Length: 153
Length: 82
Image 1 (cartoon, rainbow over the protein chains, first blue to last red):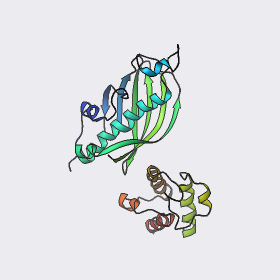
Image 2: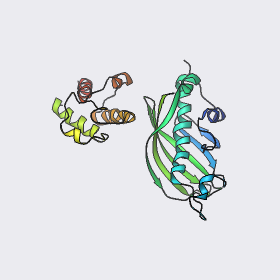
Image 3: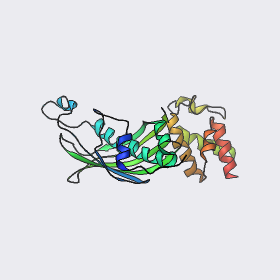
Image 4: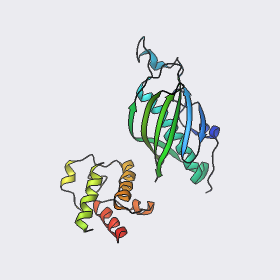
């Protein structure tokens, strides 16, 4: 099998997470060592009604999911395709394995975030990345060491 | 390194990821890492990477795939250390 270096739009098309659980708009940089992507949290997302009434704040678990979709799933798709082509991507599903996370800021409805992730290792189908999420003004809102593992679909 | 020293170090590393802490105490060569010690299968990669770092060895993926018990790990590491 031959490897393929996927373009950002091809990775987005292969990302299994879809509305209303897709938290990646745009991949700005990708290499076998890193990824940078952006997402804007639409103010009409359903969970803002309850988290919290009158004071909408994006839940930390959703920020972590956003980081995972970028730093583990999207980067993982790129790395798997690089090794085994599209066939390898199609035959696997990336699942959340572990995370160590710190939250240091708040993401409000309508905020745009940039997620930057660096690969720590990619071995035996497991990808671990060190990632951070920042607001447009540079504020660090979340940093995480996060891993996923590719399993047969 | 004596085999019992390697065994102790292997157990210390596996212990970081074992969910069944009670089973660590009486572990032997035959103790299964996933089933008896309840190490999450996705954590096996972490265990192997820790072996590489702490014993200063390289473990090929095929070798890692053959590790099921604590004894398998000790034997593999001893062979690498020569």
